[in-house]
Length: 248
Image: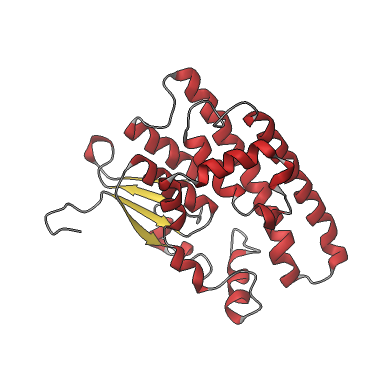
């Protein structure tokens, strides 16, 4: 960055996961400069007091806009709320009127309340739980339950995309929210060939330069280990992330 160029006003507290990718994709699509602030969720950095001050649910991503409303700093947690804020801030990717905005919100909330949580549980039971509880009989119900539910949701999305280029009319934050959760479809036990309209849309999204840039943001961070690793680092990460209560 040139010495005379002002620093970006947006700080993104981030780890390269589907919820993180939503926001980096949006920032890239909107042409907003930002500073990545890595939050290593496997090491418990999401529990640091300074992070909890902006993200009380101890989840990332979180965004701090140092040039927020009235030019005062504003912090935002929850990826869907961040997308809505950025869309309103820039006037981009939120439709051309209230009717289109409602359509976009419906599919944004569908991802937030449906696809994301169900896919997350699918990842847990298919990838991580076997490292904790190796008895396949105990895991069978969870694997079947969430794999089937994600399959149902892919079917919902496939029907919505029939005859449409984008999920909610014009290209929008709804597409940006959903695409990252389809990226790991194989880990969810899904086959895109079973959903031809999802497959078409998924490929079109992946060709967008801003999507590629957002997806690549902080990719080197993923080299720091995996939750599914049978290593001491992997075991510690699973201990940090799974089994949390209000007191621990």
